[in-house]
Image (tube, rainbow, N blue to C red; front, side):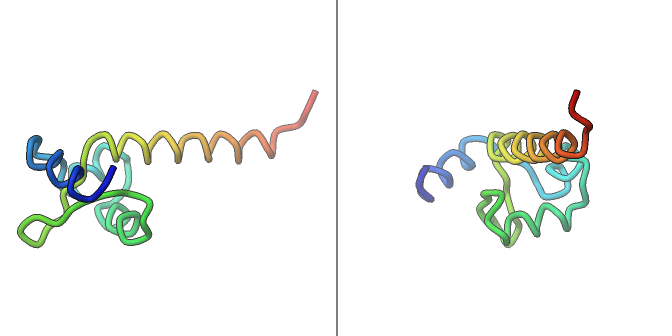
Length: 79
């Protein structure tokens, strides 16, 4: 979705702070900010703070779980 759609979506719901997103993802708030700055996690700034949509965080968490599972399976012996 475009930026305007993202802003409207986050206005309708409160979204998550970096701290809340970090707690849900099991990482630090700084890691969340790094993901945002790297373009891995979509967010908007409201009053100088990042606001993250729950769906966006869920997508990043799922993508990271898949990547971790792929890495784990690469090291596993094949039968």
